[in-house]
Image: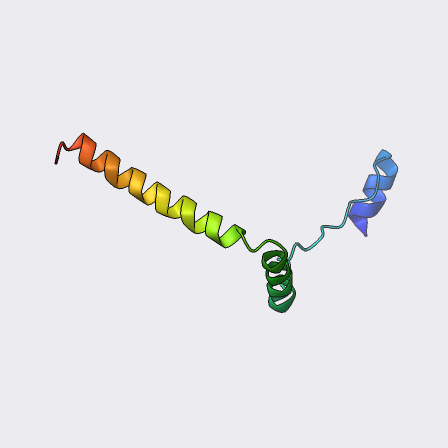
Length: 71
């Protein structure tokens, strides 16, 4: 307790205890329930997602063909 007495004599506050940081535990079932309920409420979302992915893929192929002048 020598350090604590020294800090008190100097007028310093007590040393703060460090908090152990841990990673949050993910509840897989709860996340699945939330995702499923969101998709049931909004059934258009998967179609939009796959449409955007397919459009991006086509756009990339088009730009590759354009840059390398394959056509």
